[in-house]
Length: 281
Image (tube, rainbow, N blue to C red):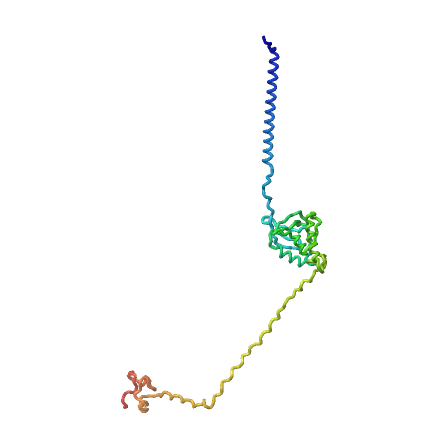
């Protein structure tokens, strides 16, 4: 007859089995909850992370309206208030300095009315400080230095940009371009290269008044020639006057009709238009 283990030993084995199963289930639940929590955390992080495929923010575009000096310009943005920009990294002569008028004329021709981008680095003296980049990519400060219209004043620029500006200035100095030639020799305070032409006022003298026109007297009428002299025509005989028909009869002018000289109504007794038509008495 086989030997059976005691009852308390069987119960102990079952207890250990349940404990093991419980631990396994707890471990599985813990692992699942950890994975779910981590997934939710990753989703939240991704939801609020900044996207990396967006285009860069647009840079405001300005239009140059006035060139005040070789390194000072006024610009108007597409929207917003106008600014006055002091171009960073260069210095130019004013109107009274050496090569000042030439610099202002060159800068005006290059910049006025053009679109540009401003890379501002701060303010100073009430003006914006920064780089001025034209629409075609030209850096204005570099162009001014290379052409000899400015000198490098780059104490406030970083080393890489400052090196570009120094190279541009060195190129102009080597070619003695612009203010690097005589008489400036790179000195902005040197007297101007030429005095401005004097302003002359042309005064037009008034033309003298023409002399008064004096009318010449009319020539006298020509004297009559001897051939033109002629006897005056005789004046017509005066119309006869008859006091009575007797005078008419004596003048042998009877009868007198209304249209005959000497006819009078007093002589026409019957008023038939014929006077003194009766026979003589």
